[in-house]
Image (cartoon, rainbow, N blue to C red):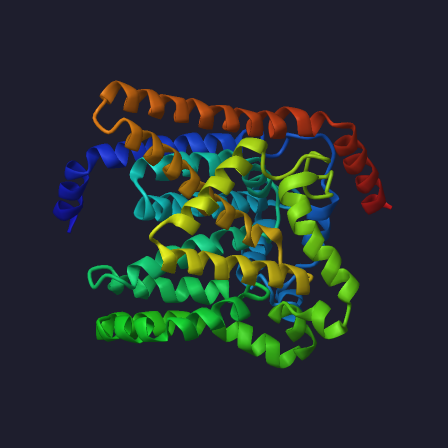
Amino acid sequence: MIKNVVGWLRSHLSYVLYTSIGLLILFSIYLFRLGSHVRGDNPYESILFLEINGLKDIAENISYGPIKLAELVAIRIDEPNVTLTRMISVLLVVAAVILIIRLTTKWHTLRIGLLTGFLFAVSTYSLQLARFTNHDALFYVAIPFLLLAGTWLKSKRHVSRIVFVMPVVAILLYLPGMILFLLPLAIIFRKRLLLAWRYVSKKSKIIGSISAGLILLPLLVSLIMYPSQITKYLGIDRLIAGNFKAIYDALIQIPDALFLNGPDQPFRWLVGTPILDVASIILLLLGIYAYIKGPHTLRARLLLYCLIAAVVLISIGSMVSISLLVPLVYVVIASGLAFLLKSWFTVFPRNPAARNTALAVIIIFVGLIASYHLQRYFIAWPNAPETRNALSAQSTEVIQ
């Protein structure tokens, strides 16, 4: 076995080297002054800690169960510091970045995958999500993983990976509203799922089923013991309560956060700035146009379903976060980047100088977008008066 590993490393040396360098850069950005980027304690992290004093607290509100359990362990090890709990968010966002790169590489090219992954990784939203103790980071993984897992079902060679898909899906089912997100997909693609299941080895079926069952067991027990949490877990609590004003407000906040004013959370966001910059919005529009005019109708319909389902769940569920939607936006942005390059290469199909120039312009363009997001997070946000006031005022409230 050791010989096989050594042989694989030798044959994939450049891949391992570039991947290692990329991860080193990514972790360096996410871990830079992780515990001291802003002055003052973040009260919302303190509130999260108060909600997970023990296993009983997690059982009474089982949503985000796996990440709460990991945070509970981190708190027991590193209390009162927040470094370890923030590391959980870092790992989840890094996983989301890797999934975005793998997915967009599979759907487009490695070049597009790397450019999209870089944009996604250094976006202000990814930075604040990775460097802040929160449960939303688990939402960040959901859509990229599900879309990538869907590509594996089309190949007999990759269908054996279902042994890894099943436990990950079981973890994602702890997310509020995720069961309602997945159920229609399972019904729509039931034939493909059943066909893929036929090609999975008996050993993989047993391992996958047992691991998924063990992960889901605490969820089922918790919902039976504390049924009052079911509506929040399903992500329909606003709808069941008949709070249509809250549903309308949440619906309006989605485009407002993405394109106009951003999240109204000065303790972790630069107030008045949208999640997407102007250049990213242009790429998003190009990506939408490419899917409307392009040949990938099934892919376009799948993305449309994810968009509608995410918007509905964010609106009707108080615990469903816009973090579910943001990775989907970057999947479409990847199509915009691919459309730009393809259009240029169509005009100059055999001119290497023109093709290299186009690639260089795209790389500079992406670099400028990344620079804006890095400066917005590391320089503008911590020095904004709203940020300082929110952290100092809220910290005083928590102490009181």
